[in-house]
Image 1 (cartoon, helix red, strand yellow):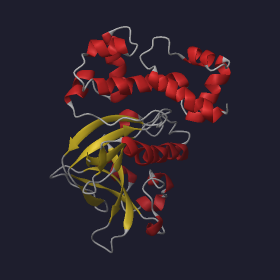
Image 2 (cartoon, rainbow, N blue to C red):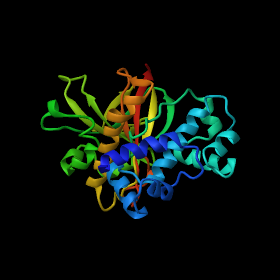
Image 3 (cartoon, rainbow, N blue to C red):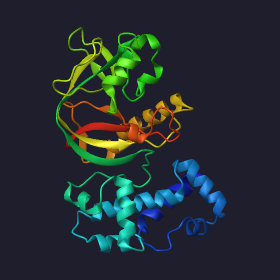
Length: 295
């Protein structure tokens, strides 16, 4: 059996035995006739995720589905291998950003099929009203070649000249501790040129420093995803690659199995919050907001 065939068989087995108490990496290694170390190594290479983490995520995804099938939180917790409901509650909130009860009140959320892994994680659905933002604009040499997945976190490619219109001090004073957003937009006021915008929300009546561009982000329902943590302080280009991979995962994997489609009337953007790690953070994350609507 080739490693790929092994992994296909292993994924099928996991999917059929998610509620088994003895479904562990040790058991799977023994069941498929490999040493524990070798099995875990092969699984990580083929699936891009540790086997124990894969089992945990799949159990959490199945548990989230069960919350919309009139099962109690206690029943679900025990069914999917948690020793106590409180332990399930804590793990669920860490995984999805909301409690099981809060999640159950929302509409059924899309999930991944077995074997379709994402490095990022789904966080939540949010309804966000239209808002204005003010910030810098970064212009690529050839906007016809821009791909929002492959050119995500475009600010990493910026130079001091890109920020010349407004001083760093004036921008910092205006931005304060607000979340920054990064988004590709078409310039309606010109010939529809594509540009990357990096800025913060501009509250009504707030004085915007001269030189910053003001853009409007329409109202939308967003699916929000969080990137894996990365050392932004030491490796900003690596951080941008993590963000790009998150965009790929969303569009090439998440939408494949979701009950949602991209809402063309909305605007997808990256959100950078100081709460998720500042410029010197060794474990910074970003959130990706994707406008969606039901199929």
